[in-house]
Image (cartoon, rainbow, N blue to C red; front, side, top):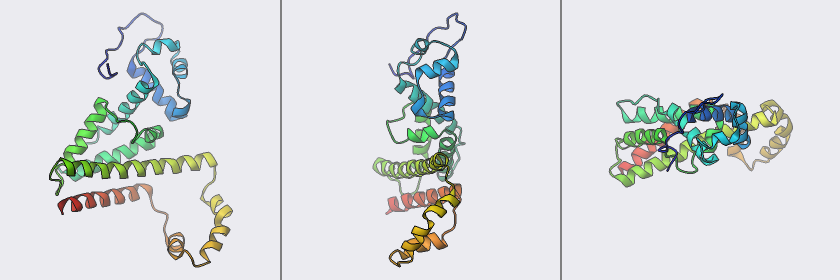
Amino acid sequence: MPVWERPEPQPRAAPVPLSRAKIVATAIHLADDQSLDVLSVRKIAKELGVGPMRLYDYVASRSELLDLMVDAVYAQIAEAAQHAEWRATVLAVVHRTRTAALDHEWFADLLGGRPHLGPHALAVGETTAAALDQAPGIRDVDGLQRALGALNSFMIGAIRREVTERRTARSTGTELAAWQTSLGPYLTRMLNTGRYPTVARLVIDGAHLDAEETFHHNLTTILDGITSHSAV
């Protein structure tokens, strides 16, 4: 039986009371503070002050734990207000998803992998699909599937890239100035060859774009493309 439908164990007299919600909250805290790579039943049990075997009464496997953690984040995304207009609803959900992934970077690692079928994930999927189904030019289920595919591909790719860049900056400890000092002379020599004029224009004339503003601009461009293409 899926963890979503499996009843929790009956409460029992113990020094430390447990619940799935408590286990999941602790797991999320550890993943936020460290990473999914170091997350283990033993580490969660130690944080809770219980023996590892007690956790298996509530969560049968690491996969179930990850499913529960993911759905807890979707519960936050589901709080995005549902608007009367389809486009405002889609924008709210996608921006909320980005915010959640920046707050819980491990969540980005689990986007686009195995299907997310928890109740909150399904609720977010329903809200998004129902809103997009109202978009001009979406005439049938095939068009809706393609539109959702295009939207999700952009969202997952953009969020993963942003999270990866944040992690890289932290792990290498190299800020922009240090990077420019180390690779700037090489890049200048290459651009001065004249073989890369468009890249040179981007490097020399391009501004440092705000991440949130760029995400919104690209998202609206995707929505414009989805609706105009579907209407043809």
